[in-house]
Image (cartoon, rainbow, N blue to C red; front, side, top):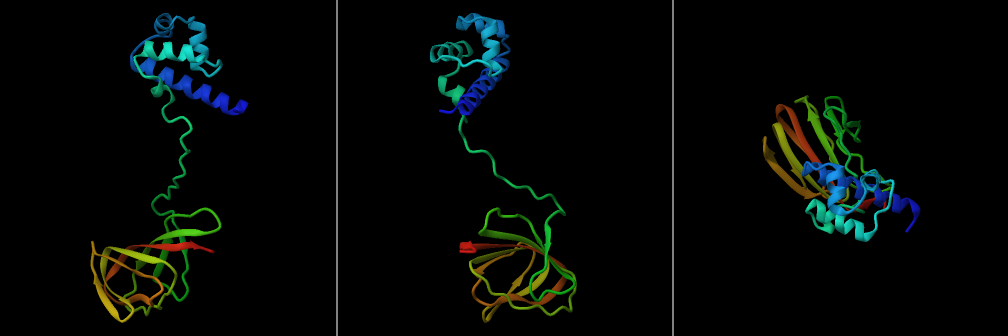
Length: 198
């Protein structure tokens, strides 16, 4: 184990000891006495400045009334990789064949060379617009938020109203057929069978 990982474990254990001590409204002196350690040593353990022996950790856990596993809980768990896009901050994307009054906002930026999915918020405000037909890999999911729209997939059309959802194969020609009521807002998520770029 590298020095860096040992230091990370020391900090993790120290934070857990402090968390349980404060939760139980105990002072450093209280826990040190119960664990048979000096207050100075316990303080160093809490601050990640000293490596506690296994025996010391057992005694500290007993003093805090928790199991040893509680002190190691979440250690080594993968870091969060969530990506937040705040309202109105989605990147505006121009899709082939779209014109004024039809906007796509990309709501997540899938990192890496290959995209696994693409979620968009699509807005349509022009009832007279003619829309192109799209074809792409993967499966597409649409959920209507507002407005009314006839949506074509292959040789079938579907009436989409607020709260409706539609899922279909992206390789079949599809796209808006007729706008019935504006403004239209819908979420669409394209999930690729294999990451785009393969």
